[in-house]
Amino acid sequence: AQTVTQSQPEMSVQEAETVTLSCTYDTSENNYYLFWYKQPPSRQMILVIRQEAYKQQNATENRFSVNFQKAAKSFSLKISDSQLGDTAMYFCAFMKHSRRNAGNMLTFGGGTRLMVKP
Amino acid sequence: DAGVIQSPRHEVTEMGQEVTLRCKPISGHDYLFWYRQTMMRGLELLIYFNNNVPIDDSGMPEDRFSAKMPNASFSTLKIQPSEPRDSAVYFCASSFGEPGELFFGEGSRLTVL
Image 1 (cartoon, each protein chain N blue to C red):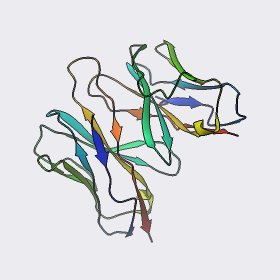
Image 2 (image 1 turned 30 degrees about the vertical axis):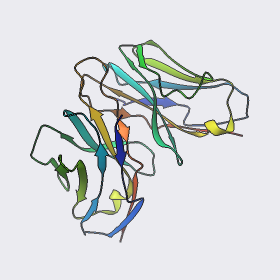
Image 3 (image 1 turned 60 degrees about the vertical axis):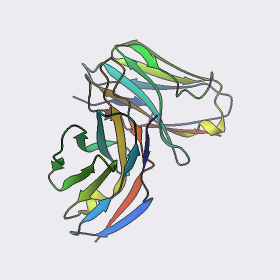
């Protein structure tokens, strides 16, 4: 079974600064996918960024980037130029690759509450 | 597309009552997931369907919980009888293909008194 750990329950950052959220995972799989989801106060889960384990290049989406360290099983999220709208819960998630129609199951970490301060 | 639609958005009921949560996935998606979110346990996968067929229901807490997907555009999660410990936010999500990005609904907040 896979486990995902987010060791920072809460974090805060000043507007326009950079913040890094940590995530580690444990798996015996070699092919898998990693995700960061954002859950604002509206409650809806929104995909922020994804990373395929077979890709060495770190994924980037505008102000969001990841530091994927496969050997260390680490997948941190960096938010640059933080904005007030980034205030939310952030969840790291793992999905194993499956050849059969049995994939797409996400295992979530416990979440990190990020507060962006003006 | 309207996204994943869940109803009701909020439900308050008394212990012992039957609760039915509803979900309409995004048209064309072939996977549907039910997740439960609580402060204590975080986000837990309850059950998921592929092409309307339940694939893995190992996350369903107990026999009081049941889920159905009679067609590609509708799913229900039923709790009968409900208990206070069932209070949580229940999310439905859908995706297409493998691996597919999961699109979540806004969740149904259930409070059982």
